[in-house]
Length: 316
Ligand SMILES: [Zn+2]
Image (cartoon, rainbow, N blue to C red; front, side, top):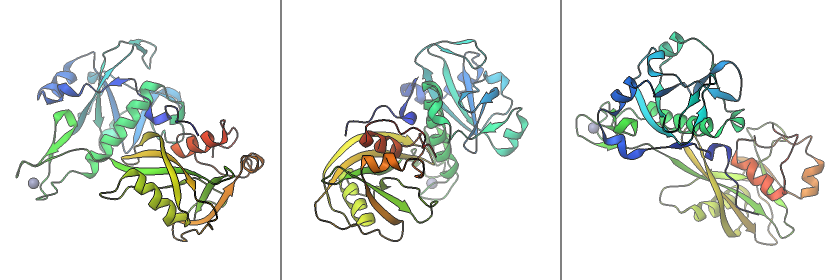
C-alpha cells in the first residue's frame, strides 16, 4: 500500500497566520475591515450560496452584512490564492476570514438555509473544505469547553479565538484534538481485514479504528486496538497519512499492518461483532451489496488504497 493522497478534509487553501493572534485588537479591526469575509457556523451547520448544490460554495460575507455578533469569534487565517467569491466576484489572495459561531436565536435571524455538509464535503473546493474542517473543530471545542478545568469559572476566548482564559486563576486552556488510529490489516494472502459493528446496518463493513489512550504511542495504539477488536497480533505497522475529523475534534492517523500467520479472528463482541478477510476479487464481486465507509472518510481511502483503485458505485 502507498502513502495516502491528500484526503478531502486535509485540504486547505488558508494561511492560518497564527503570529498575529496575539494582537488584542485583531478581531475588532477585522470586523471593521470591508475586505474581511465572515463564515458563520451554527450547530455544525453552514450556509451555502443562493439555491445551492450541496457541495458549496459556502457563504462568506462582509462583516457588515452579517447582523449578529458572536461571543465566539475566531480568526481562521487569510486565503493563499485568489479565488472566485460565492457570488462570482473575486476574492483576492490574503483575504482574512473570520469565524462567528452563532446561537440558535442568532442563526434564526439570518435568511437562507443551514446545511450539514457531512455527506457532501468530499466535493468541496480546497478553500471551503479547509475552512469547514477548521471551523467545525474550533467551534466544537469552544462550545464544549467554556469552563475552567481547575476552578469551574466561565472562561473567555482570547488569542483571536485560539485559547480561553480563566478570569479567576488566570489558567489558559487550548483547543483540544483527540488522536485516533485507523488501520488496514492484511494477511499473508494480501486479503484485507474488515469488521462490522453491532450498532451498524447489516452488511456495513470498515477497517478497524480506535482512540489513542493517554500516554500511548500511535504504533502501540494500532497494535492494541487490532488485538482488542479482532484477537489478531500485527507486525510491520506503517503510517500512511492523516486527516482531521471534526466530529467533534478528532485527528485520524491512517496505518497499514500485517497480521501474523496462523491466527483466528475473534471479534470482541462489544464493539465489533463480525470480522472477515476479504480478497480484492471478493470485494469487487460484492460491491453492490456491501455498505462501505463514505467518501469523506480515511477508512474509505485506506480500503481503496489496498484495492488499487476507487470503488465506484458504493458510496453509502
Ligand atoms: Zn479557573
